[in-house]
Length: 186
Image (cartoon, rainbow, N blue to C red; front, side, top):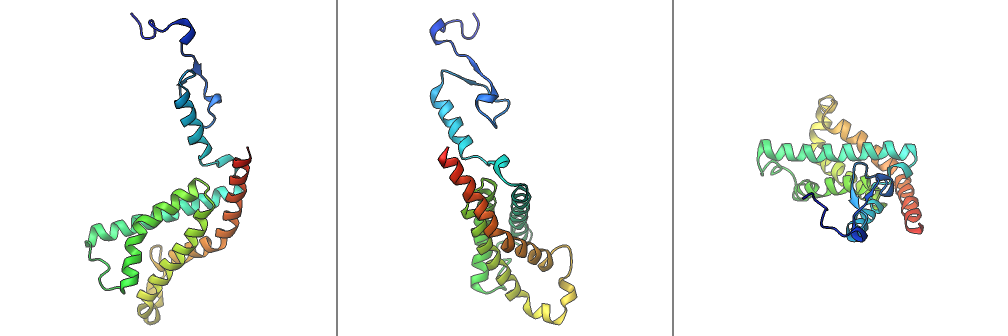
């Protein structure tokens, strides 16, 4: 006896091609399985909408996601290498912010990856707070030896990424809002 032999002909499942569920290549769903199809359609509808973004927004999205994931990795590395008291020498608001970034950085990355209009704005606020805290904590060293802070890691790349986030947050927010409106209208 083979699988499916006991299914009456009127209820036999039929293969639905990936074209029926765009964006989900190699997915095989049974046409008779309505709840599963609804779930797939819903997941696709809240998807990344990659092809609907302008080219510049795709690049900005990649930079946003990579930057915020790298920021998360930096904070995780600091805590793993130096322990949970790594930020004890910092002011209390900065310490709280650095630990809040464990949640905020991946949240921002996901919101931007899925083209949520609030993502770039939250990213701009998060980067402004992060840069403010880092400059506040490093200000004396920066005044005494500014060249020590020029490098591939540290304040310089953080500042450049922060300026990129601030410069692109509003245009990216508008592009995502347009995508969201088009998706809702359809």
